[in-house]
Image (cartoon, rainbow, N blue to C red):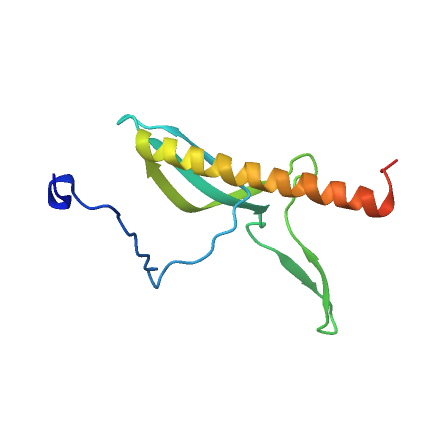
Length: 126
């Protein structure tokens, strides 16, 4: 059996970046399984809700007074701004899960090593 019958021995993936691609910071993700059986992920950032308006008091001499905005003292409003949406099929979700677990395991091992090195240099933490 020659190499042509078995197919290629390697597959090379070459990466290109879309010029519109940008780094996105995320505070969280919201989503679920859609009617097509795919996983939807909506990544968001959180910030304090801006008031619908603000006003400043104008003094008789033309100077500006303090700024006023309508707030409810009993309610904290937070805005979640969705910046990225992903839809994953089962196989891609499984691959992402495995990839992410590998990265988390690496970070945890590095953190444990750093703590061990710190204890060797400074003694155990109290």
